[in-house]
Length: 584
Image (cartoon, rainbow, N blue to C red; front, side, top):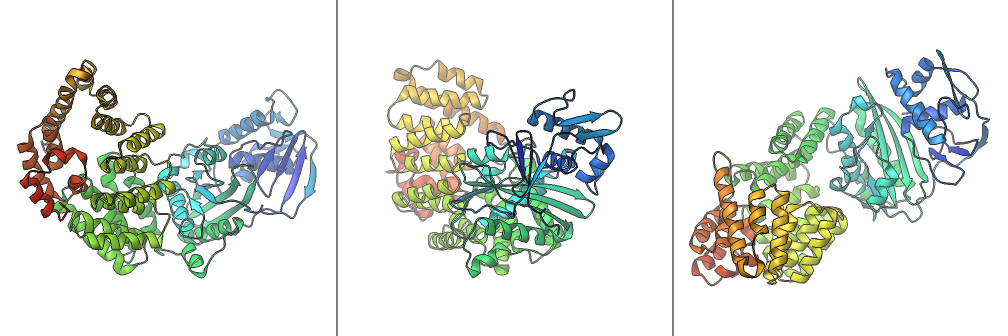
């Protein structure tokens, strides 16, 4: 494993290079942002100032053991000229020698320093960004995201450090992404950025831990490993980050920090690909995650986290009506039971079992038991706080449900889904003013989210604010590209036609659902809700009876959702609540 360079300070013109912190500082004291390879290019030229550097030799120095095109070097030189000021026709810092290479001509002053890190001080929160390739054409998205995902899981399980979840950072994959800008957007004290370079069976990783407020480097290091020993590389990075942040680790923390869920590199890489596709939106890409998770546990049958991945596909798909429940839940159960047999200390496994017990078995006691155990194992796991809050909504334990939803949002403050869930929780609790405020805050995260606009419209409707409700529903229709429904709502008079607007929405939903039934699974609860909005209680009750047999999350809220209030005195609805083991 390659050791970090000895610390040096190089000064030239109005600039200063701090090699320990891998920073380029200008005369105004502010950091000038450079990509890792642009920084390496500048550092090499400064270390060989006033020497004619042949292009081929320079490329070998910057990209050792890797064949790159001359254009890669030209791009770095262009970046440096732009940051330092000047162009190829000026000779202030970098001179082009036609047909040969480049020469760094500014006078350089060198100072030694023994500092290799900066104290973590008041650093309390961290974002680990998706790693990036050193060469743009060599992208491996699943490994880039997977390295971040693995380090997030390790670091979030120790101490009191707040670590942003993968759902918050996964959007920062652009090669031009500035780490400090991302850190400010994520509202964290520190950010970890890394770059990857693969050649055959070797991997080089360069990592920097930055203080977001000052731009100072808390730690930087470059590591060379065989790809087959990627776990040792992750161990080293995790330990160095913990040390740089001055985290106080218990014996259990130290164990969790370097815990390997598998020693099989092939299984690990297949799992990363499964995680990568699990986050995708299209059903086709989501289905690919299942295949990769299956291959991961085939490669290592003792890989507990791989079975959790399988459960996340089958269980999530069944719970949210993406897969037929009677087919998917048994497979989810097999996977999660296997995971717990292999490792009962995985928060992900207890979360999966809690969801199974809640949605498929309606076993409320076991649901709460395993949800609490998952929280105990990983208090920063936003997904388990979200799931536990949903359970508490089903139980109509409103204050607890709201508190747990707020904990989920504290763990993942940029999650539209979690923020909307908090709004839904207020709505179910009939705390409509708070629901409106929360939905409005959610739209600040994603103003183009049609689902949130629709939910906001529902609350306005409950408050009798007809015009505002119709406006939100019209906006939701526009965002879903339903021009016909948007036109109907746009022409509706709020005072005289509010009920007509509700029926129009329901009729369009029924029309859309009928079209989807041709070979595509549609949860029965969707028909029940649409019929209820039209005022057809008989059809709604018939579909609710089917929905309660399907075992997805939507049928669990019939005891709490205000939409079902018109049915609460109907004895058939009361029987459905009893069948679902819900309090009447």
